[in-house]
Image 1 (cartoon, one colour):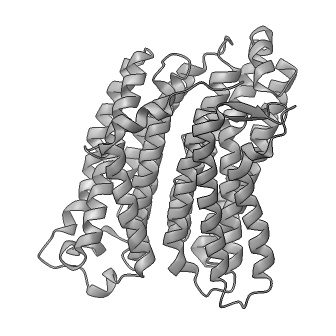
Image 2 (cartoon, helix red, strand yellow):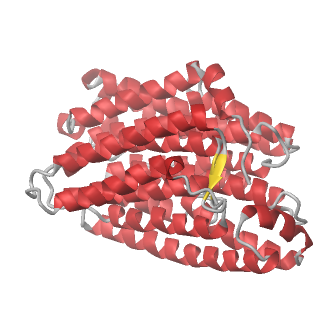
Length: 473
């Protein structure tokens, strides 16, 4: 049994920092808890360093009876999550500085980040469910962190939906265990093909329900707009980004490793869910006037594109690299847009951004890059990600799904332009107080995320080969 703890340094760094931060916060003055934020950032940097070194030197391995896999998907997922956590920390500084529960905010963020990392490498159904809980429970508390009416309502909806689908996921785990006589993906790979069809099908749907909730996909998407609109902007940025990385990589590993030879037609199920998710997300975003709700439905549509890679997980050699690269590009681009929203706390509606180009040209440039990036406009990373994932769908035999995705991409330009056009309006600009900035940290985060989105697009030819590699059983 491989119990090499050095393989888990990124996860242990976040968990250790969470414990140390909680203890330190008990002694620090309530109005001077910034050292805990610094500790959280240092933990992310340490995790990034360890993840990069592991990818470069250690190779693929499984640890603790194969319950956790350290391979290419885990390595890339770690890098994406830890960079995203650093960006969320950056845009959170002004929002929580000096608050009575500042330490608790950073600790919850570290814990839910550790849960997301655990989801990425989970190679066992029980490990998968434990990671689901660790990623979810702290996020419920973060959603209601502001303790206002909208945040409390959002946290309750998030919790109830998560509890319902978490229970469904646990029931699905039990059914798959009964069918395959194991919870480990290797044993399920050999045991499920001979099991009863109905048992496997219902069990798989149950487990997928929890992962679809994490990703915010149809039909488990109902929480996304309310949580995004009601939570503080940095938390909204988190819940629309990092859970998707964990949920989708975990779903890809489950389908690719545990269920490639079953009679259950899960590729068609995922293809239908992808089509429904991208279409519903785009249609719901068309006439939104709240910027956060528009971004919320935008994230739903983006999940639809990402689900295409899961649908062809065992049908195309392009599936893994398209999923991993798209996730990296989407993460940077979405966080850039939310960083601008965080920097302009009083600008809650599209009309509040009228004339922003004249007053805040730097933030306008970031917003243009990120919104056009979400459409899939070159030279941003999402453009290359969509190109890869559409190619994977065609290669996997789902040409109709790729065509629908192209149509949805063109249609999405409409609602992004409804936000972009007012930025350059010269007549009747929004009042100056509606475009007041929050501070330097959120602005720096916005510029960093926008630059990352462009860098991923320009350096895609170098980065994409790094996302290819075997998954371990």
